[in-house]
Length: 275
Ligand SMILES: [Zn+2]
Image (cartoon, rainbow, N blue to C red; front, top):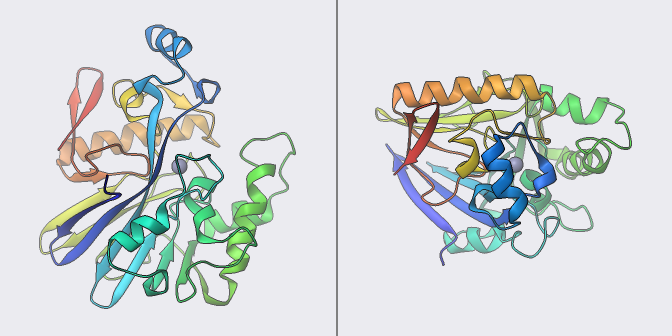
């Protein structure tokens, strides 16, 4: 099955690259409705906890911008196929000119370096948000914290690998012409989505506001332990879902299933994703 889905947003080409797919461990979920918790407790392969790991290629003029880089081998054998997906688009790894991470969690950055810590995308300039950069490089993480110790070394390692071509930016900077950033704090301090605008067409990437679409669209209160500030992440999730459903703008996100691009509609107390 193809690992890529390509669309045009005006004159900009956007390709979803499916790095892999996985079932979230039930221990990673919090704030569940009783009926959902019962289903998830019963099965490790419930559709409620199924997610994809996506990266995005954005092509405009002579720029090939890669947003996120998948999880390499870190999350097991069903993930880590970003390079296959890029080759499916007809590009080589050296054709990537620009690199950005929606946040510095392993499933978004590990595929940017090899197991020796060397940069995979040798010709890519990295833009990194100051708030995200500072969080992962300036904090001393508690060794037992899931979001800290195990992952902070990887984040600083990836930043080091691209140090020669690293630019620290703020949310007001466009990544390339037509691609702007959306601040979505909570999951991490500098967590971001992005927006593509061209010729009166638009696409919004919602970052990691949702990890298990079948569960969290229906019940946006359902959350994961991967959020560094759970309360702020919940507010961000509700705010973004309200915005894109009200504006009826085409969406995608870091863990969207198939189809990759569609519209989010209000349904009762939750939402539904339709192509
Ligand atoms: Zn993620």
